[in-house]
Image 1 (cartoon, rainbow, N blue to C red):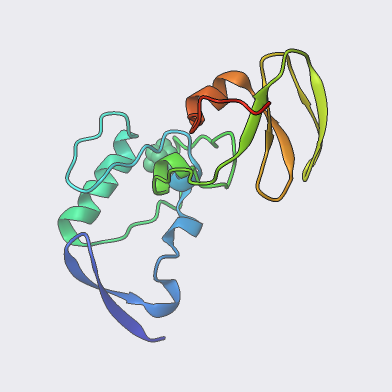
Image 2: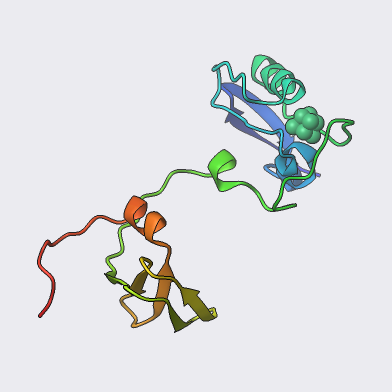
Length: 152
Ligand code: SF4
């Protein structure tokens, strides 16, 4: 199997081409509720102590060490799904939606089926005409108005 080189943690590392980047598929940490990884070189008291030591060993020596077995593993609520807040990048929404805060509970047909909204929730309409409800506190923490005027 071909071995390729690339730069990881500042090291010029070698890895089997077919296995490059595949460690997340096998490492228990990536589906463990104790896993709170950080960026290279930073202390991270919130992370699992074992995972942190493994991580620091990797940074110090240019290694990738998937954890195959661990007595302290506890499945995260979303099982084998990666946690975007831990392993993903940050994104900011750029799409514009129209929304109205509802003064009553409501049901709306969405692309994912019929959904229920409550009084104070927002009814949103996207650029393709799709509609969906968003809980009031989530909407107000996520969206900012781009106009103070409301349509007649
Ligand atoms: S408890 Fe084990 S599986 Fe979970 S993050 Fe720590 S080392 Fe990984």
